[in-house]
Structure formats: structure tokens, C-alpha cells
Image (tube, rainbow, N blue to C red; front, top):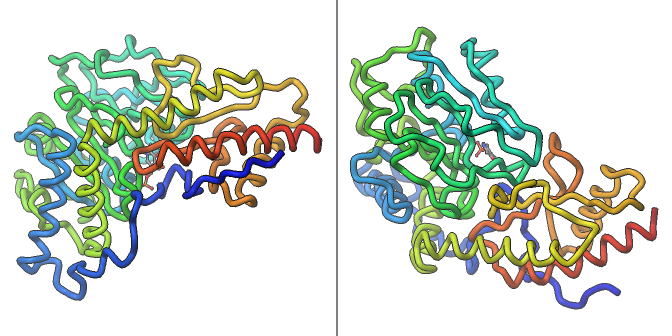
Length: 377
Ligand SMILES: Cc1ncc(COP(=O)(O)O)c(C=O)c1O
């Protein structure tokens, strides 16, 4: 039987993610449009992004928080191109995005990195990481639904820098700032902002590296963080490298205000946790579906990845696609097919802008779509 109740908002994409509840385009009417981004009022709005992000995320006062071009990818690549090569490098990869950073470092920067990998569903051996090298890793593997459990595996007295792609973790998971030298994320993920701009957060040690090391390769203007061996402080004070979208800035500032209204970081984390728990309770009661993540301690609370485990399924990939399509056609869940490089299954975004009531309303539909597809095989 088809369920009667439908999620009020069927947007469960893992990026761009659902807008915050109550979002409306009309709220952006006050955006500072048609003005130079170098004008005083515009610079103040842009600077506000760094101030409010720092406030909500609890970023230490001696860290730099800046806005950079090209979303999270821009921020990660800028960090790698600017910082790597000074010492050995260790790359951790357990899904598609981490693997992409390995390709950058090995094939483009041509660095002889130590690469620690794991299959989808697992983490590499974190105890094997050599922190005398720089270490590049993803906090939450968006395409496998596996995250690092915490920062305990990162020593406080490391010699190398840690460069962390936290785009699907920031605002939904605790990030131990003392363990992270470079952290990146994009506005389009947990806060449901717009894409295009990335955030780059630097520890004092990362700044020290930037000011003491010049990489041997050319750096395009869009990546340059120093001038004459000194950090370009303006990038972290509202003077972006190139022109930002003031519409996206306004939207992100409103997302940050919403974040405050739901209890700041703890409220945001609690929302993602509750969404994930709703799915965990559902999975627990069924023998035909399971998480891709093997260890519950590494289960993502944003990009929740599921696999079908029923013996009756003949073609796993076709089956998962058919279920996702059925739910999409019904208008109860958009964009929940597994990522193109990931094992067959579903990926349901549980980040903080998602309402738990919507996850709960979706789950009976999953029962229905599963049974319908089993019967249709
Ligand atoms: C872990 C991770 N890194 C990088 C990206 C790329 O992000 P963007 O498109 O914002 O550059 C994504 C997008 O889903 C991601 O999940």
C-alpha cells in the first residue's frame, strides 16, 4: 500500500542541499545588489560571513576564516597548491572525493605521496598515519557515508599540517579545531546555502607555512594567499580575491542567522543526529537494507548511504536505481541515488536543514518502493 503521508520537502540531495526550513527567495530582497563588492557596505557584509561562521563553528580567535572562489573544491585545491611540497605528504582516501584529491597531488602536483586508501564503507588505518608529513583527508566521505569518528587519531604535537575537507561535516559534526590546520567547506552543504564560494580556515601553523614556504609550481591569481611572503590578510577580512555573488552572501548570512535560531552548533548537530537516528531505527528493524558504513562509530550523520541486502535482488545497480526513480517520480525524495562512483544504493541527506518529520515521512515510502520493485523484477 502506498503511504498517505508525504515529506513536506522532498529535497534530500547531498549537494546542493535543502534550503533551511522557511526559506524564501523573497527574503533576499534586501541583498546588496548592483554595488561594488569593494564598497564599504558590501565589504562589511562579506566580512560578516567570516565573523558569523567563526561564531557558530567555535573557531579559535587566532585562526583565519576566509572566503575563496570555486566552492569547496577551490578551497581544498588552493590549500594543496599553496602548502604542499614543503615536507612529505600522506593522502587518505576512502571514497570518491578523497580519491580526487589523491589524483591532484599525484598527477598534477606530481608529489610522491603516501596514499592510504580503504574500500567504500571502511576507513583506512588511521593509526598508520605519519604526522611528520602533511596529511590530507576528508572529515566526512560524502559518497560512502563514512566519517572519521573524532580527532583523537591526530596528535596535538604533529610536525606536518592537517588539511581537512570538511564540506559535508561542518555545522553538523564537532570539528576539533586544535587538530585541524586547514579546514574547508562550501555554503551549499549543511546550511543549504548557495554554491560558488568556499570557506578556508587556517590555523596559525598553516599561516606560518604560507609565509615561510614558496611552492616550486606556478600559482594562478585565484589561488594566491600571500604577497611578498606575507599572508594577504584582506582575504580574511571581506576583501575577496575576486568578485563574490552578493546574493549568495546574503543567503548564507541568513542561513547563519537561522543556525543561531536553532541553537547554534549544538542545535545543528542535534538536528542531523535526529535525522540519522530515524533512518538507523528503520534499518535496525529490516533485514533487506543496511548502511554502507561498516562501523557504526564511523556512520555519517549527513550523507547517509544505504545498500540493499536482499537475496532476491537480481541486479543490484538496476534495483537501486529503480527504487530511487520511483521515489523521485512520486515526488517524495529527489536525488537519493548513490553517487555515480559509489556502490549501488541510496544516499539520503540528513544534514541540519532537513526536518526529522520529513525523514520519518519518507521511510514508509522506502518500504513501499522496495516491495514494489521486488514484485516487479
Ligand atoms: C567531500 C567533498 N569534497 C568536495 C566536494 C566538492 O564540493 P564543491 O562542488 O562545493 O566544490 C564535495 C561535494 O559534494 C564533497 O562532498
